[in-house]
Image 1 (cartoon, one colour):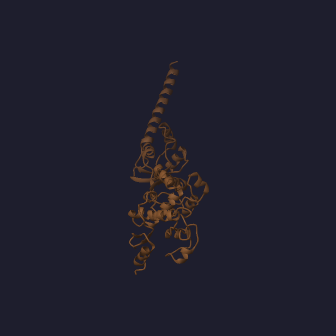
Image 2 (cartoon, rainbow, N blue to C red):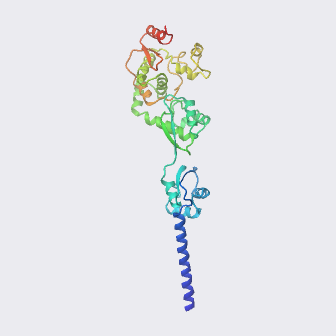
Image 3 (cartoon, rainbow, N blue to C red):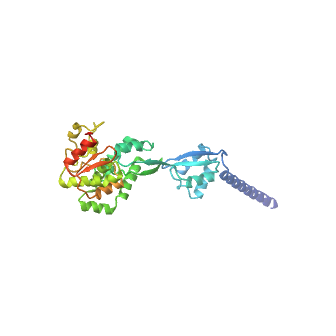
Length: 334
């Protein structure tokens, strides 16, 4: 009997010792860095990767020594599904416990994307492509995809004009579709219900407002002239005059290069406002908030013409005779 008790006590002692040793080993594993080098490491987690895959990748990068211990600890911390996808900046030396903390709390690396006012879709696609997040061809294809346009509730045949110019920040895992969604969401965040009511009062659809605003954006060299340029277009529309806007000619002519010639003005397209009455088929660029505001709230004026003074500003005229004199002065140097 005494021998049996001794054996039992021995087994219990060994079991306790094993548990204690295992506990110490686990604690040591979780709180001891694999490397003591001071480094900044870019660690990418792809969308859909699970904890097992993340742990395996961390071990392959020599950031943790044991995948099972790390995974168990992450589940204990209820973090198994809380590690965000994207590019993480990890700093060593760091223990596995600290690595998990960095994955949960450090900011995911973001890529800056600035879309200036007045870019068209192709120009926007080129800027987007420079981030490396989305190819220009795919971006343009989505902007012209009827299903995408419908899903985004854009009242036009493309997304031209609705890719709101702003500065955006995207993680590497962002898709082209998500980038476009953010740009159009920003447009609708800026385009308030008060502006829509103003458009209704003017008898303009949303697409017509954006189309007019895009023309104003392309014509205006300085911000202060936007409302005055808008007044010219409004006045001409009220009188049934052609809008005769050079940027619309350029947008609608795929063969255009260099300077506008008579042949360009004579070419009939859905955007050539020298050949058609009213607004062109759709927007010709993405206008900013100030251009949209100018389209909805133009200055009070009797101007019907404007011509560039070659210093980013324009000379505005009320009559054709006055306009012709301005053209001779500023364009023909006569």
